[in-house]
Image 1: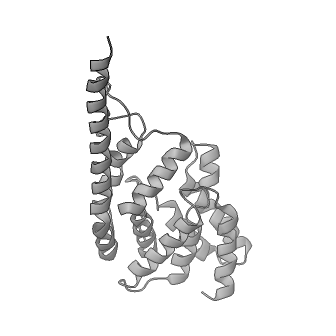
Image 2: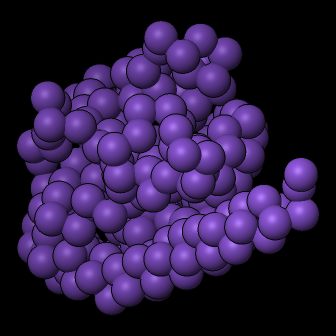
Image 3: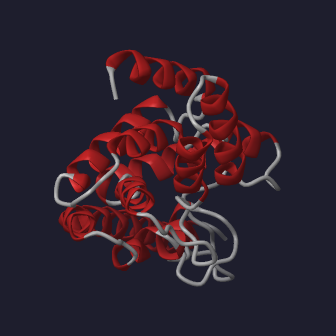
Length: 225
C-alpha cells in the first residue's frame, strides 16, 4: 500500500471517529498490534489488513445513535461503499468488509481469513491489561454506568453475578474472559503479558470499596440513634 492510498483511507477513518473509547488512537493501536501479530504469520495480505484495521470501527457512531444496530455490520457496509467508490476492486472491498464484520467479540460469527483473525486479535488486545481497564472506565462513564452496584445488604457487589451494568460487572462478563479467545500465537502472547495488570486493578479497587463500605457502615451505625 502506498502512502497516498493509506492517507486516503486514514482520512475517511478520521472523519468517522467520534467515540472517546473507540477513538482514532484506539484505531492506531489496533493497527500497530495487528502489524506486530502479522509479522509472525505467513502470506498476510497487508493491504487488506491495513485497510480493515483503519476502518474496523467506522460504524460506531451509528450504533451509538441506535443501539439496535451492529457497528461491525454497519462498518463493513460503509467500508465496502467507500472503497468501491474510491476505485478499489469489489473483491478487495469484500475482503476488507469480511474482516470488519467478524471483528466483534462473539461466537456466532467468527473470523475466517488470516487477516480477519489478525484484526480480531489486535482489537481484543486493546481490551486487555491496563489499557482495557482504562478504556472500559471511559466508556462506562460516557454512558452513565457506575463503577459497581450494591447488593441487598447495601454492600458493594463484586459484579460476578450482576445483570445491572457496571465496571465490576463488565470485568467479570468480558475483561477477565478474553484471554482464551485469541486466534494467533502472537496475539495470545501479547494479551497474556497484560493479564496481571487488569486483574490486580480490579482486585485492588474492589478491596478498597469493600473496606470503605464495611468500615463506614459500622462507624455510622455507632453514631446513629
